[in-house]
Length: 132
Figure 1 (cartoon, helix red, strand yellow):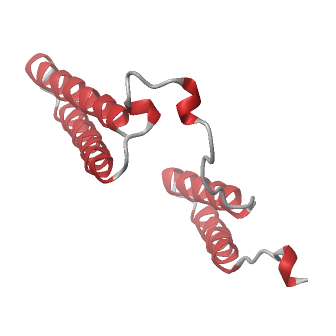
Figure 2 (cartoon, helix red, strand yellow):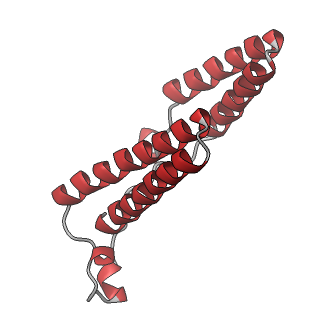
């Protein structure tokens, strides 16, 4: 995760540099605050990746001398597929559209759909082959 943290640290420097130049040239408060907040969020992610990389073993991606075969083997566990996250994202997008245009009827319908999708995601279960 050292590579990822380095990328976010470079982005952080770029965003803060852009914010300083924009502050001097434009003197427009909304853009200045947006650029500084973007740099701050990038700093948060980069710092998190830096702390996590200290706790993990070195990955082949972090070693400049690594071979392709060093990355072979078990990749990890991937949860089984579910349609609930897609439904939850669609409902959240509808809530956002309803809030943007302030359509109360759309906010209510999308809120109900969002709560239903969250409930479906939380209470879904998968039948394992051993359970038959």
